[in-house]
Image (tube, rainbow, N blue to C red; front, side, top):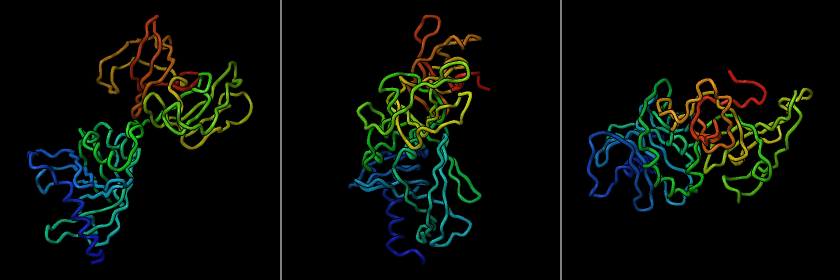
Length: 326
């Protein structure tokens, strides 16, 4: 065997730990997501409790910030010690995991094991809507994510993830920074006005025929704050190149962000959700004055329309300060 006996035992222990539930837990016929804490080990798995059915599992010891990932799958070269990359995808999150294979001869089972950080990406992935896609070599499998985020609560708490980080929703869109004062001009290292300042944003600049504002690239939200990875200025200036004024990771308040909404608002971030406000052909009269949250390509906004305060979700936003978007 390429793997040591200890490593093989660790494989079995990680998989077995996912199936350790109190006696009162009833076995279920349909597989689903389940999580628990037992003797200092937190687990999350997709399968059936009190059975030998667990296709995916995550397990970590209290105080650790990484989890052991185990996937029951036989790759093309199903030999002990084979190195295989497994990629998990859901929403707009892609999470590659380097794994090592081991054959469990007693169970006639081949397992792929790797290490994964219990961080924002994993939490965003588990909190996504729809299906979890697992890619291995030329194969793929899908698992519904219903209940995954709730079942992962014990794993996240046990592995030291901060509550505010656990609440981060992943997304991707651009917006401008129009507010004034510290809420608009300071980039912080966490989703809170008490978090340390990491950079300052410049103020407005002269555009083609009006004053324009810095533009930021948003990657997530938590508690009314938005995670950014870049901020640029001079984007609409008649002369000169675009200037990158911030690159990295930081947080700005949703009260300082602006964008345009180009269609009606929904009550929830889903195309089939009820309409919160139907703008018809008058979307340009809806004035967004703050952002509340985001999820995938959806943004929750607040503003006024026809003298009314309106709040809702849109997947049809535009960050351009000088024209409409395609």
